[in-house]
Amino acid sequence: PGVVRIGAGVRAASRGGADRRRAGGGSVGLGRPGGGGGGGLAGFIPVTGFAPGRITDLSGLPVTKYNTGNDVTLEIPVLKLKMPVVGIPVKDDTWDVNWLLNQAGWLEGSAFPGFSGNSVLTSHVTLSYGQAGPFANLHKLKTGEMVFVRAFGNLYIYEVKLVKELDAADPSILQHEDKSWLTLVTCAEYNEEAETYLKRLVVKAALIQAQPERWGSSWP
Image 1 (tube, rainbow, N blue to C red):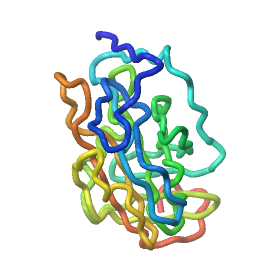
Image 2 (cartoon, helix red, strand yellow; image 1 turned 180 degrees about the vertical axis):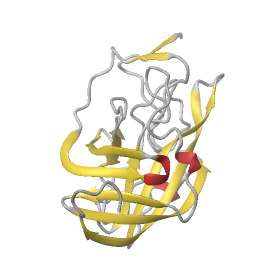
Image 3 (cartoon, one colour; image 1 turned 60 degrees about the vertical axis):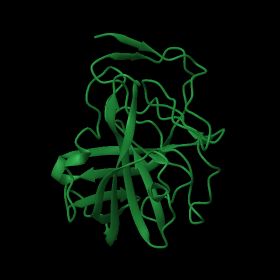
Image 4 (cartoon, one colour; image 1 turned 90 degrees about the vertical axis):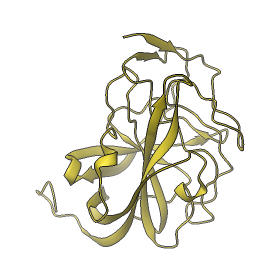
């Protein structure tokens, strides 16, 4: 496969502008985050997919350190997907998702998974070496199916209410919720000519039950 090189200074457009990010996942411009339970966030969702079928060279980019001490796991039984959740910090009004591999990234500034509000988790549709990422099959989810979050000895069960492709700057992706909602997001519709993803695939799920963890069981 070919190689796409991303320079250290490459970023997406600043807030309010068009998404000019070339091939790759990475930092994106966004509005100033609101608190975890406040007015929510505003702006672009991170570019969570690299160019499919080719290698993206990340060697010129600074490495972002993620928060791996959350002890949180995302599980989607129908997709046979189970993955750790890491915290992606906000820095200079961006989230840098370049270094996500087989993980889901919690966009810090959104509600913590399991808490009241809109918890936003993202993962790659395509990894930097051009192969399918953890969220490659996210589009196969259907309304009524279950998504689980395990955190600190508790199991949070969410029911999918919406699966839809939206514009990257659609405010509904990041909008605050009074109750506990989980938003899963990844990139969609890669455009070869523009070398970027035109849409974001969004899954919104509502918390329907929270209970203590059942130790020794893979699925509820």
